[in-house]
Length: 214
Image (cartoon, rainbow, N blue to C red):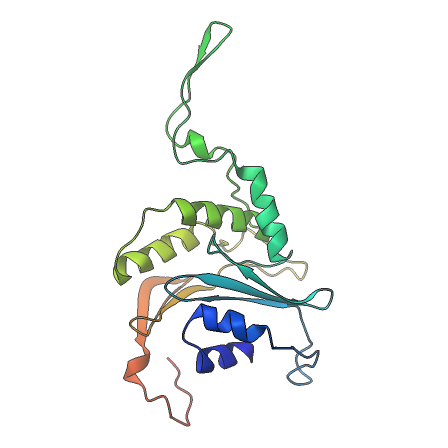
């Protein structure tokens, strides 16, 4: 419900940040089928992004999201603190050194990112996505930025068969999607279909009473 309120009433993140100062979220389920759960959202425009995080323990908190990434628990501030464990990462290769007269040189490229996580836990996927996002070359134009988005997220996608939950079912990335507020276009692809699908909101009337499906 908070996302519907945000998209219907505000144009810029700065407006949302100010309005949230006067908002209280209630501990009530939408209906009996869904329990109240801790939630968090990323809200962004062309200039900035914020994280809105809600928990029973701390209530509602708003964070500036300078790394442009959101993931699951633990809380967002924990993830930011955890990034401090990876300050040695950089996109440049390590240089050869002399260890007591013995020349030690790196093999191949990518040595600057040695230690970058590659597993599927939320904390490590956050680190990898943040590192790639802040080091990705500046993209200009919608096409380049959409490519950037999908290139980064496919690097942290969960592959079917790599994680099995306690019910014996695969945990995997079913789809990846983003939305351009500039062209009002929704982009997505699926685990079994890499072709990029595009859906333009301007192709549909916003006052329709029927649900559009694809």
